[in-house]
Amino acid sequence: MTWAAAVFWLSGAIALAGAVLAVGLRNIFHNILGFALALVGVAGLFLSLGSDFLAVVLILVYVGALAIAMVYAVMLSYPLDTKPEPRSVPKVLGAAALAMLVAAALYVVVLSARFQPAAGPPETSARWVGYRLLRDYVLAFELISVLLVVAMIGAVMVARKARMPKEALKPTPRMVG
Amino acid sequence: MTAPGGYLTISVALFCIGLYGLVQRRSLIAMLIALELMLAAASLNVVALTALTAGAQHLAVTRQIGVGHGSSVGQVVALILIGVAAAEAAIALSLFVAIQRYASTINVEDLSELKG
Image (cartoon, rainbow over all chains, first blue to last red; front, side):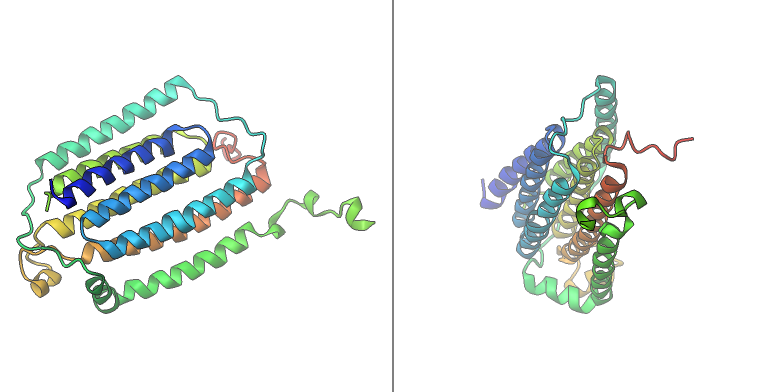
């Protein structure tokens, strides 16, 4: 077994285990930790494909930023005494049946597809990614930065306290006194 | 190099676990987590297919790097996907905080004000 194959199997197992934890556990904080684990596994899969830069960016953005932002959202939006959501059996069964159905359909497509394998090694280094990103796909690159700025400003505007209902804006006795 | 089949199988599994979570969970944050898992599965697909299979003959990028070689275009697509997913998550999380402030819940079954 080559190193790439070993990394592939290990990372695939980590990704799937993390995904099951991220979806199956009932505590939302454990879900976020499972999500981070699943993304570490996906980053390992990218590594086994030779995409080292992409793997590092994935860990930085998803595990470093997104999971932390989700923890903050949980802190701001979950009352501490929230009970785990109850689980209704028909809904779980229906969701599982739907997921199985879609998985079967997709897997049939995967099995029936015939790919022409690459003759040579892929252009994997970060040098190639930078070349593509800043030369061939520079328009998408710049649009992404505009999109991120708009999203940040929009997030601040939406989450700001000025949108509270009117009763909440009335001064409390403590503020008056 | 392994064939893309293994990566596609893991991608199918990730996608369907995410789909299951999206349908079954009721907390908005849990649904966002499931949605991000599905996005990660999609980007894994793109990267695996472009790196391990020969490019389509009609694409300009295939002519540049030579027919039959894997390309790094999938990595660029995945980077753009990560950027869009980050923007989407920022908006979604701030909406969840605003919804929690307005309705005191982020359970989707309690957010039924538009139901006739």
